[in-house]
Length: 609
Image (cartoon, rainbow, N blue to C red):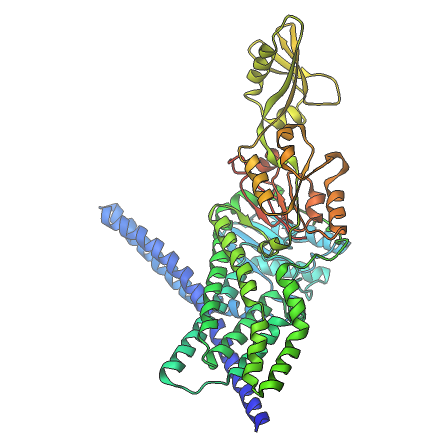
């Protein structure tokens, strides 16, 4: 009897899950597409109403023409709804060891198209990275095309009036067929592009499933409908406790699909067993996730032109990422799960032996699942990602925020704490000249210069009025000689000024409870006492990072220019030099791009490695 009941319960849950999955996928697709359509039509209609209200004569005719354009736009959008819903279904049901569905989209005359076969550093990948842009550039209406080797995409700037995304896709497929890569899939390990709607579709589907489950549970309670036994939630609890099974699923069907499938299973189990609390909490959590990915895409749209609307801003070859010398240490949630995972089934068996109640045995496993800790960490990461994106900070790899609880060492490249303007650090006067005079004369000359002018490739001399600064001839490029006309006043040491928030960055790093490590740099000499350790910058930051990792530490790196250290670190924060920021050369292997410490808009990026 029990076996028949369990079998029937399993069949009922499976059928409900299949139905829920189909409904959620379709509903999410229609909701996302419909929201986009409504936004476009509302914006255009508002503009039309304004024109009609204030127009006369030819203005009325222009408004009528505008109205016709809005109507056509609405019709085109309505026709596109089934296609967008089908796209959502393809994205959410791509259940393979490697992702099969190609991500491609076009907005504002720029298309992003994933290319099959760009993964790796072999000769074929390099030839493909050259052949795809060449083939696309031959199309009439394409202004330029360039491969982003880190994201595995080709970015195309084109005239939307002359060709569309499908024509570009046909060209890419033809080149892939020429090189024999048309059947290759995409790795799940690659971070989701911030402009990709796949994460929004998944979060919306999960939220919809939780809302359906909550509604079903409440309706069942109110109308006293029959419910599945409480034990139906046991499978969900076992998956939450046994992280090995979750990791296996991620390898088999991918991280997005794993989270979606488990969310649907949990929603179906709790909805059909009339559990209200769990889907309600899940819905709040999924709403946070949806807000995070939605805001992430919005900040990408705001900063897209700044980051990648020039061919030279894209990396042609991926930065090699060396393997970690040791596995990443587990976080507090992982440690708790690893301890409970093996004993949870035994605990449930003991409870069942003592009580003969399957429900209480299921409760024992549910109590062992660290769901509150997981949601606490995930909710913090989502809220942080949402707030960062709202302030103009672009997360490129949001998964890094979920690993911040593992960080034990924070390594800061001192150049991050420096501003763009140079300042006089020390001054030595010639006999008969006051030090204050030398200091003021050098400061007047430096007022119109950047630190890159003086400390970089600039040869000098630099002049202001009758004052002249020139190199002193020694190995220190910041050591300058001050002249007034033909008279030598003295020598000064010039370094970069501190960024206004430099001390705040160090204070925040220290408040995290991690070991704060700072590279030695004369410009930040006053901040060195705030660090726990000082590193010699000449030894190479990447080597220090690997030694910390060999000792079992997880390292956060904040660096201004050390690409090798960025590739070696576990999340990485990067703030580029002002010259790189002006040139628009972001580091695509990093995890976030945000304002520099000084308040001017630069880039600093964390990255998971």
